[in-house]
Length: 326
Ligand code: PMV
Image (cartoon, rainbow, N blue to C red; front, side, top):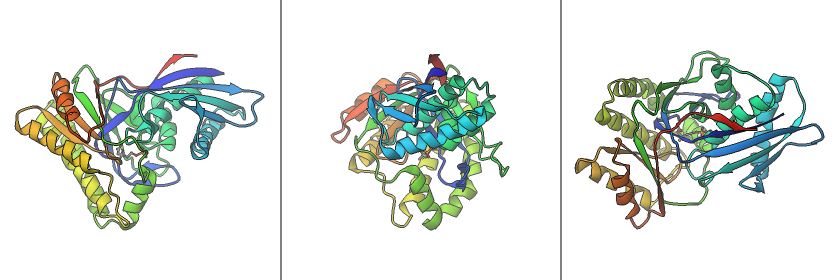
């Protein structure tokens, strides 16, 4: 009853912000992301007959109580599916900072889904894996797949149609992603709390949900024709619109720091100079720059030279979550 899985974080180009059902963790809007390759989460799950409680080890140390609770609640869903009570030891490692706006929850829950399903002998179809992963983290189903992935909002109350699927494989359009780290501290307001605050208080939230389908449609067209400029424009629009919603929440959600803006401006300057690159920013201060194949090096150098940028990591697009051992 054990398995070992790997998943990579994903970065949304068309953002998810807001929930249509809190209990089932259903998104209020669909989203489109890219799955990375060089950043990863590796998770081993071992179900132990004599264990009294679940135990989560994160990067070699017992995890904080809140993370333990979240993983244990998630394993309860898995145990219910398998009809067992057995507790588990979960050993998970990230090769990038946890909770710093790099979607460690997405890769974490995608790896945990694949590993725990295997360890419990559950052969689940992709749709069911999505439903489970989503209950761990809204963006986790996207990390179950590689390349460009769309996560649907879905219409059904039970959420069975709020699932993810691949739009293009990494090989079909091997864009490059440079992550510019502008802070290594955990973010101040997590995405769940942030979304809730925006939903309750931002006057722009209604406009956000009303216009989301148009952005998804435009991104799908850009991907079908591999039109970089079109993808760049709609992605930056979706990102800035999400941050406008967040900024106008009460109290405000200001995820950026001065270096975030510096990096954003540098990306815009590169684009004016003819480098095919665009930015996106999640619920944190890091800037992710997405470039056409072959331009990652130029972008990494330019962002790495900025004063406020502490580190840059370059990644290609990678595969979805998968088993890597027992
Ligand atoms: O899956 P969560 O709860 O970590 O939310 C992700 C929210 C954003 O990263 C800001 C946007 C997205 O679509 O990934």
